[in-house]
Length: 122
Image (cartoon, rainbow, N blue to C red; front, side, top):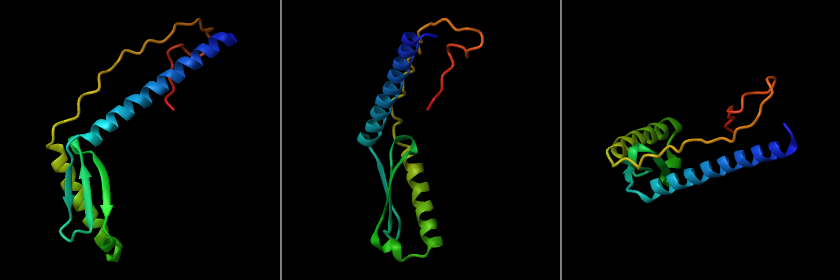
């Protein structure tokens, strides 16, 4: 492979990465902007926010939580997360991500090279 081909391939890969990052930002914005369920523990020391599909977006600890021992705090957090996930699972699901077909530029590959369609996710 010569340098111009290598540069084109690298540019293509960078564009794919940027496209994925933009899609992830869009999906995260959709989760953040959609209806969330808020669950507060009985002792009000733990607050958990969960969005559609039960995705936990935030866990908040009140100052009183620091007075609990580790085992009690862990149990309180776990119970609040489970309740928020269950409640968030009942919310409307976020829009499905539409899969775009991946179109890779074709290039000549000597046999000792890897196949042209090998993709490495970083």
